[in-house]
Length: 307
Image (cartoon, rainbow, N blue to C red; front, side):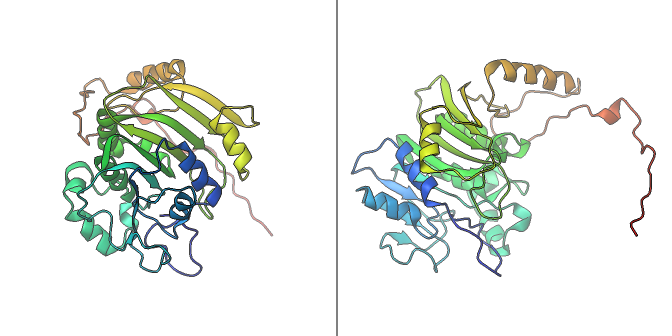
């Protein structure tokens, strides 16, 4: 869902509104025609809907859990996307899904997830509300359909998101990923953000086009276009990254760097641990820690008093 946090109210739905310049950039990443079926699973105030309509796309469906939002659009269904019974497929699913840790979820949202078969099969209480939005969106895509989301990047390499990552590897591939490390995109949000374009299908593209932007400054339309076409831009880095594999953390690094990190990670594994994970297994790998080899204690502590 797209939004800046409302003043003096609890952000109970994980709402952070997408700035127009980023929504416009994301729509331009899509390879669609005027009659393509498009879904926005958490439309917020409707920035994507408005831009899509302005660009001539009218075969639109949207969901929004907050009935106070997007009242000017006729094609918004005011119900939870997570529980909605959707019997159609889409060519493009685009937007800014909500991201809330389980412990911070409203009780009625926890109850909803506890009754959801997707959540119960693939996720658990260590997972984020975001995961089911990505998973269900892929299920609702046509073959060669596109998923374009803006969201935090932490799910790409955490252990408890491995079921989601494995599902994505089996069911499609990434075309483009844009990583914004310190770029201020959402008000009062400091996590690293990614925009990704995922294509559902069996045709595997060998490489992912990756652009990384490190500057702590707001991005303009001009600079976003430079990232898209990989033109020279201060604080930007462009990579060609191999498609991700099952049971791996997803690192936005070159093949050489990923190989070196894999060697380090393998050498840190406890030798008695079975390192093979099943496709949707949430089991964790056990790694050696510094404490397995050394005694750790406090050094000299000097006390200061401010007068």
